Length: 193
Image (cartoon, rainbow, N blue to C red):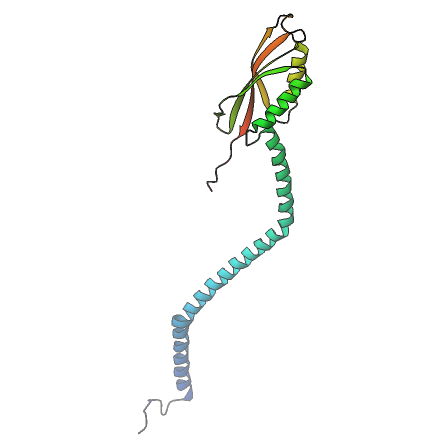
């Protein structure tokens, strides 16, 4: 039993044309249904590869700059240490009392009172007032304030009151001074992040 194609007696190029049409149809069907998805997937993967290569490049650049960042961190830590002397994060009452007492002794004062007051929080810092009262001479008081001004820590003198003493009561001291020495503390940043 022979299959009849209907091409008997026709020139050979009819069969070639039909074969070409069928081959083209198979090619376009395969391309449209199978290879289109593969191409789309390949394009997606190429984009992802490009993105990953870019991230790798950025990582290599960051690694190359790592020594520079480490040096910057060291510099910033040194700067922070300097700034903490000016605006410390803690009260450190004992150190401040020792320094004030040393200044009073150097200036031939009697330190009568050193009374830390309640801290007063502000937006970025805390004020810490300390009431101080001492006896001495006017010249020594000026030197005392000059030396306080040279402390690495910020200390403001407020509410200064000077009264004269009778020479009979205190032969070497002529004045009594009371004032508020206001220093400041850095607010610690909360670990919110």
